[in-house]
Length: 441
Image (cartoon, rainbow, N blue to C red):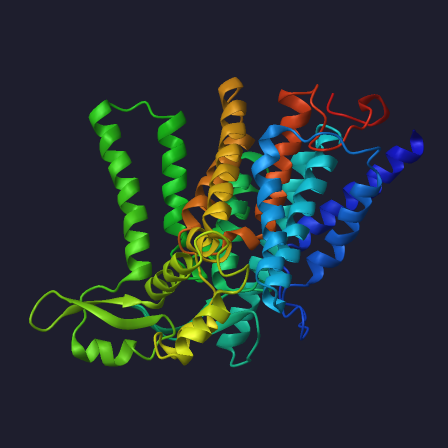
């Protein structure tokens, strides 16, 4: 029994290290894995192997995880339907992330009561370090020293050419996403130095210059109105409308431009995000144009219509777009981008079956969160609900399924659920004897 405890102590430490290094996503590159295999994977793979190894035996999974299991299996079956390197990588990647979520669930459900909060605090500190490194990169850039801690963007909307912070993450959007998640967690996890942490994270969010902050504001507003609303009914309706309008504005500015003159079009057409193949005249001199994001959704929808059941294969939309580019049906720049939307991406790559399974997976997550909040409104669960709402909103214009922190947080949620709300349920798949493991007490 002591040996088992020692094993779990070791894997718990490994998971803490993984949570801390999640933001370090661009340290090296390989020709086959590209940027998919990074420092977090070096830590996560041993965690997954040890978690499976420590299982006494596999038991029937709880129904709440059925959709996630089925989506993982469907993504692996996609390899057989559409065999190619991108599809193999995507299938293996989703399987790895599923194992990561499973391992996190198992470790948390068998850990001491204070462990989940410690794990999330370590995650916040890793994001905080990345924000500070990003600021250092900005300082170096201002001194004329080139570095990889940010990206120079020409012709950024409204502002013009500028430097956007990203740290060691894959993109400024990723830095912003991580920092917003860390911001929500910091509201409930920290009391000492909380204001310093929140201000630093806000600087990271602001200088990444992404519209993700609008999704974060909307998520915060929805949670506030659902659980803390004490306003008059009419004023509450006004607040609901305001937060919905924020979401609508975010999606509009992602997919379409404001009315532009011909002179403005000649400048912005050089930008990476420019679509411009469709315009809606507003006045005699100004028109609204679509962006690359709108074109990506259109091509994803067309891919789905051509392959409604199995899709074109996981990670294969680039290949689909390239084929259409070669046929002259899509602009050449479109072949270099993935769907930039989990909802449209899953439709295009995994068909209607994968799409339904993803919707059911998110439904399961929100259902479990609401079960906690129905029993007791804890700050941690409100933070987790805010994060999943935020990520759900972001899924309209970002590929959130590949976010490591999504699977980590999902594993934490399920782990707490299996050990707290339903202590009689075996944790996820595992049937460890609770008497042999240090549990929540």
